[in-house]
Length: 207
Image (tube, rainbow, N blue to C red):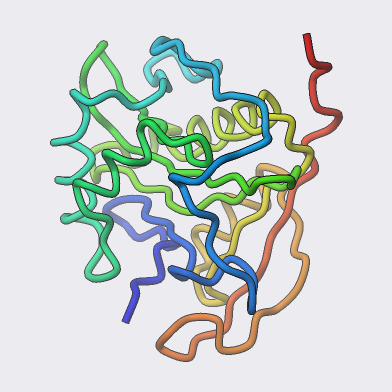
């Protein structure tokens, strides 16, 4: 059964929505499929302002080893494979961001999905290393996700979290996410989930 993918323990931040169920009865967006959204900005430098020690940028091929290692160390099941990460790096409907310090020290990652014809972005995965605890990595990644979503023309960011995942819930609510509904039996182990959303304001005008 899939891991919660949205929990914060004493060791690290780990957050993922229930795999394959962004909305009941609706398919997962195909990361390799076509999109009518604005193209993702491609620069590999900083995606959004972060703390003095944490920098967030788009993931590159050279990050694959770190991405897979963190995936395997963080999640017990429902893991994304190296091939899936590789596809997401070049996808028009997904974005993979990484947080780092001291130029190349890998601290964490986030994956966000976009749907063709929709202005709602969906946070799928958020994870950080144990040594990143307390360094603001989760907050920096979420800020970068929001900026990326705005650049794609999205006006809302949506995520799902287990009702007993108090650490992640505190993080989301502190950053302005609001509870939008309860999802009964949302996770494969039967646990309920909360849906959270955050308005992103007006999308930037097309140039």
